[in-house]
Length: 452
Image (tube, rainbow, N blue to C red; front, side, top):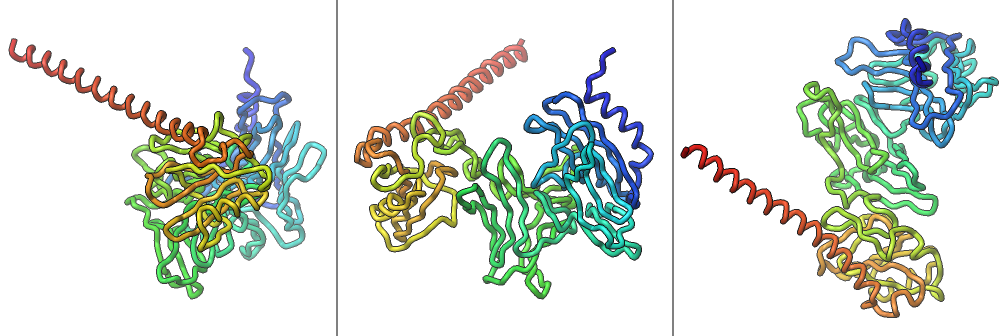
């Protein structure tokens, strides 16, 4: 019988490592080897679980050495799990690619390392000669190197990824990050003096798309996740605000989603056997920053309509006044904040400011307060009710907008938005009509059966 390479790999190492899975610590001199498949297998994931917390309500924290197929290669990392959910990874920011095998080693002088087959070090804690005696997983999921008197020399809590666990604190200027697949953008959750905020980041720009501010402009010092919610504290450790959990179950972690960029508070449901979000920062699809591709509009029906013939970056771009003009889109706005801003400017002046800025690709004007915001990306765009005093303008190649705000392209864009919503409404109406007709027929048949 031919055994799939991935299955064979997992079977062998579960046999070799099963006696140590119940351990909560590893001592210096410990070393484990994990084989890498000879051929690339798309979607392959192999893990050897080394440690697990004890005496906790399930699920427990577990520590694993992992091999994962990604980008045509195999990456190796040390990971912490809560049940089946990844809480931390040594390869979150920078992957260590290897072949043949990956080695986890806690050296005799106290350095924790990941190595390849030739001894090349792909990741390390840098804790040599600091008195480290063991690697430990604590009850709150903190992976730590400690000395003989339990002094912490290195800990995973100092290197947060995209998750904050129950009992963990994050100080001002700390942030979580997550990376959408196949994208140049990434998300960040940042703790600042006046607020916490979600950001969309790219190599050329950074914009916030959600925020929460403590009341009375009190300066924030750190946040902590407790069973009932996310707490905010000032520099004297006084609690100044809370985002409640909204569930009777104890919160277990906060996470920044790598696909949506949404922030959620999660608790474990014993009935369903899964983690469920009891709070989400954003509750509608069109408020998510990457709900649509660049140059796409998220419509009232939560579908995407393109600005131009196809969603993408080919329509506009970075160029200056001599090559471009502004095309205004009615009933459209952006969820992105914190862009370059000017006040007391007209809509026409706002458009000229974008044209003068070679890197500007779009502008948003608030007529009520005469404010103008510039953007270096056309993303996070959504349909809004008309008459709200918002004017969203996209920089296009000269001649594309026909020199008029009432260009054929503008009418085409809005027509597509209307058609998309109209088709959705028609489908829903048709479905409801069909449902009620069938229901009436069924009721008539039931009445006939009862009478007979």
